[in-house]
Length: 173
Image (tube, rainbow, N blue to C red; front, side, top):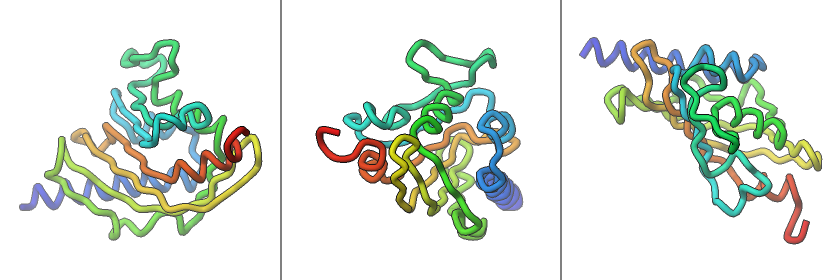
């Protein structure tokens, strides 16, 4: 039981630090270096029809650029590329209320492969091109942690329709 509690505490504290990195405006490379395993994966779930405007949606990004663990090819598929594609498309404006207290994270140290942590968050987003903004709730599922509590897979569920509308407007835009 002590090992389970220790593992739960480790995953909770590492996830909290990961979330705080966004509030501290850490660079994506620093976030990947600090909070992720050497072979990370990032998946932002969304419909395949939205990829033309939201190129970070609906696929899994693997590995790192220049890390020796990259599966990169010309299709921009590393975790570094995820952050680049996201930054070219959307601005993220987290504030002190974006993430709940760590006590509200859902932690299951025995789930999946080496534990799962779920976080519901809220923030403002803005299209880099149009300047249209919106606020939304979104969900993080962090899993495949290593022994040090570094994240192996980060999954995001957000509101792709609001993002779609903000970056390009309605039909025919």
